[in-house]
Image 1 (cartoon, rainbow, N blue to C red):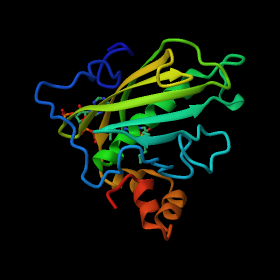
Image 2 (cartoon, helix red, strand yellow):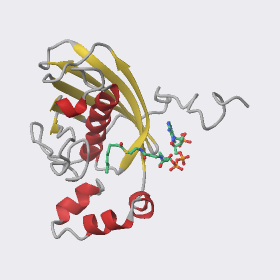
Image 3 (tube, helix red, strand yellow):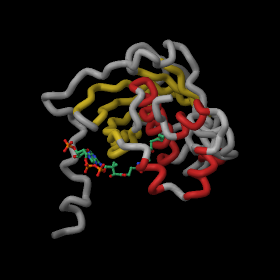
Length: 201
Ligand SMILES: CCCCCCCC(=O)SCCNC(=O)CCNC(=O)[C@H](O)C(C)(C)COP(=O)(O)OP(=O)(O)OC[C@H]1O[C@@H](n2cnc3c(N)ncnc32)[C@H](O)[C@@H]1OP(=O)(O)O
């Protein structure tokens, strides 16, 4: 078997929802449209305030199962001189798509993320992201996101389609490094504990 085929290659793991896909259902307790979601975990590289060079991405609940988010590219995020690193842009898309799970109130992790890099994003630019859940099929949660430069009507810089897979809390408690898991679970703020793992509070 060649290295580019077989079950470990990811080839064939479709991003197209199956015919029996269900429309996503916004949880009744999801934050109202317009609400800032805040960081789900202060050490998250995507949104956490505790990460000096993190993206500090700010996501906001939208209508239905949609979110908007913003992040400003800083010098620490460069790939080529003066330009955002593609991996950082993929992270911004991943984090925004991951925020959708909070509106569904489902614990899920990224299984697949396919990204189009449409135009370069300079340092100092603010990327305006929009993500929407396009369907749910069993444990698979499908989503799409787009990032525009400078404003919600700015030119498209990046796009992504994703499949998140619903997991149990044990996904984190069994696989995460114990010291961080213990610290996160010990937070006296139960909402913070819930959000660190995106668990229904
Ligand atoms: C708290 C939230 C933080 C959010 C942060 C932002 C999001 C992230 O970056 S999360 C971190 C990055 N992601 C990860 O670390 C995930 C690592 N991967 C894993 O742990 C596992 O492969 C996992 C959990 C995704 C799937 O494993 P497992 O639970 O055994 O799935 P499995 O039972 O094989 O498959 C379940 C279904 O998902 C599908 N599936 C599994 N993996 C994929 C994939 N990569 N792509 C597409 N579909 C997939 C399967 O085909 C199957 O579909 P069906 O039900 O139709 O047969």
